Structure formats: C-alpha cells, structure tokens
Image (tube, rainbow, N blue to C red; front, top):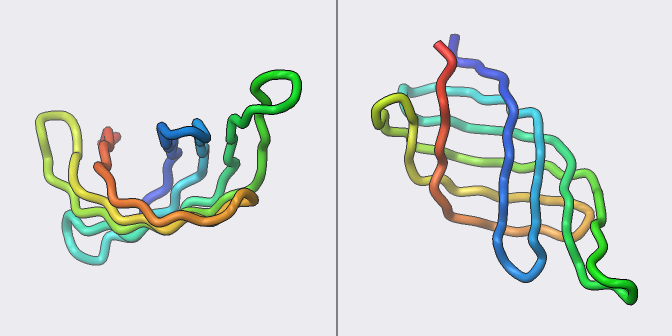
Amino acid sequence: SPFGLGLGVEFIVDEHKHQTYSVVGQWTPIPAWHFIVAPGVSLEEEEGPFGDEREMGLAVHFEVVREFALGRLDIGPSFEYALDSHGQHIAVGVHVGIPFE
C-alpha cells in the first residue's frame, strides 16, 4: 500500500529546546518519496521567572522526504513546514527512519 502510519519525534536544538511528538500519516506515490502529515503535541522549554518552564501546545507538521536505504535505516533529506501554538517554522533536515517490515 502507498499509505503508512507511525509515530514521530522531532528535536530542534536551539534556544527554545523544542520537541514534538506526533502521529504520522504517510503517502508514498513514488518509491522513496514520502509526503507526510503529522499532528501532535509540541513541548517548548523557556526561561521563566522561577527557572526553566515547559509549555505544551498542539502542532501539525507537513513534510516531504526522499529516502535512501542505509543498512537497516532509511535516511535522506527532508523539507518541513510546521505550525504550532508558539508559531511556525520551515526546516531542512535529515530524516532517519526505522522501517518495520
């Protein structure tokens, strides 16, 4: 089937210490090309008056990935647009997947 379902975790390592946990829906119309929609929860750590505080909010990520098989991993470039309660971002990164076959 060209459709898949899984779990996703994203870490952005900058001054916000942003993490997103999501349910991933995937469509693969052409082998190795994946179009992903991932609704989930975003956690962002910020400095507050009493030390570091974590804020939680809803998030959705839209991603395009081109994968290459590397041993037991799928790895490749990714392009993402994400929207959450803290704002939005566009990211270019490296996708690492572990296929369950």
